[in-house]
Amino acid sequence: MNLWVMGMTSALLISACWTDLRRLRIPNVLTFGFASLGLGYHAVHGGWSGIGYSLSGAAVGILPLLLLYRLKGMGGGDVKWFGAFGMWTGVLPTLQLLIYSILFAGGISILLLLLRLPVIRQWGARMPWPWGIHPVHAGRRAVFPFMLAVTPCFIWLAFFDGMRAS
Image: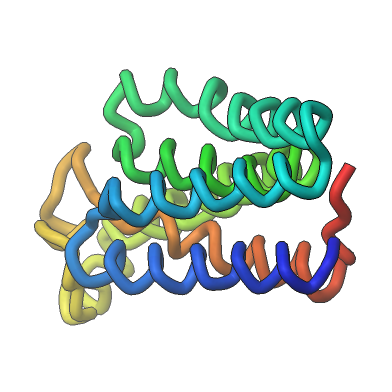
């Protein structure tokens, strides 16, 4: 992946993390702005082929997550974020990040469930939780920013696995 694409996707990640961690929201202006820039970049550098590359990456980022969104397992901003990411990186890196992030989010969810165990509950209830109802008391609706799962996976793919554009 070239440095320009890596820089733009890193900026997209940092911006989304900032807003997701603070407000549990990723603004449309951020996702649509980055998506437009990604489409424009690939149109300039690859013509019609670049546009296809960009649109297919966005589709791979959006379509699988629509089901999770409909089931209220994630917010719409996260779905649009993956679309914007896909506009920049194409199919393979988007699919890799998507799969790793979902698996990592599953791990976070398991940890939140473990906090409800009687042995751990007392300790877990003392942990600060800035995102709505504390998971110990949340019942079935414990919420955390999905960017908590995406960020380590992005870092892994970008710097250790050599995220490559397909």
